Length: 407
Ligand code: PA5
Image 1 (cartoon, helix red, strand yellow):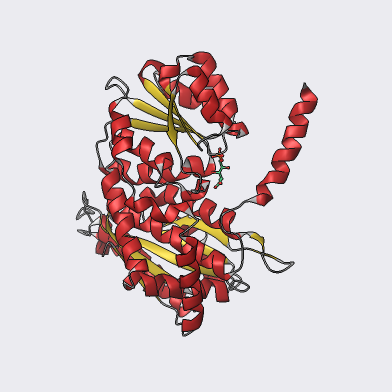
Image 2 (image 1 turned 30 degrees about the vertical axis):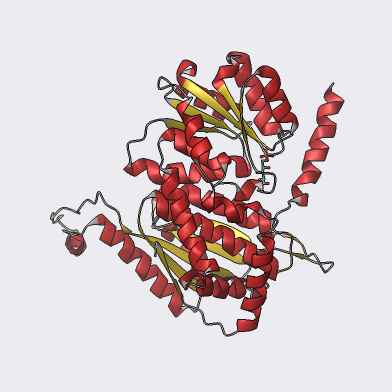
């Protein structure tokens, strides 16, 4: 088993678990992300061979589901590995951010991946237009989009490379499709191991393994208590999981904040991403003593590999800190996590903890697939359409009107 998940809350309602499980089994016929762990990655690996060795940077131009997943995995693996190429993510229309990122890369050594399911996203195409004006060589660009989208037609017209994103895979569930796998494979991350991790989790869930019971219990808890515990925090005890938290916030928020399918009411679960121990010195107070509306999932890494030890130094007047001497930092950070778990349990805050053995592709693949399944299960149980996002359209329509009135 790639990861362990200990639930500290009790649940008895087996019937609701069965309803959720059969709905998810049914959903597999139409929702494409479920099948991604078993895909054939040969076409992606063949494509990667076409990118010349002189290319040292891969720049992703995309936003939301088109960038956050690859960024989460890259930032998780990068600190512990010497990778073949650097990844850069152009996600914002902030001009300072665009020029800062451009100042870091040599355009001659950079290949650009334009990733957009719809092919019409304002952020992505304003940035693309700017960069294309600096480098209008179509060989420097690959487009990843839905088959038949206007973007695919454009890419054909300029003679650039095109890779398909399956129609039935939604943006925020696309990390294990070409959207995430292509930039990651180009950077030198082992995408086969990533999918292997996700598939292990998938088999455990659908094959009545340990993850089936765990995920169903956890999903039922969130759904049954969504009126009270409507804020769901991830408290990850590693800086490497910072962008994983961003990915989780998008997945959970955009999937679960909706009008219900069979009622006139709006519901929503609010995701929060926290990093320990840093956020022990900020958000923890609110968890401990604030309104009882939050649940917490702790994520721990058991083995930090390249560990370092606190030296055996006694500081005058600070002898009370001598108990830190000779302690490996990995042990300290996990002791800090365990202490906060104990403190929150004493306050009867609902929580669970996930332990992953170490930083590698298999573990992050399993963790992300776990969260995708959990999101689908909770969405089903709180009666929302997990896979659409009508709420983000209104602002886009107003922007379009404003832009049209400029010309
Ligand atoms: O999850 C989603 O569907 C969204 O967050 C999209 O990924 C985001 O809006 C970007 O859209 P697109 O890939 O069409 O450019």
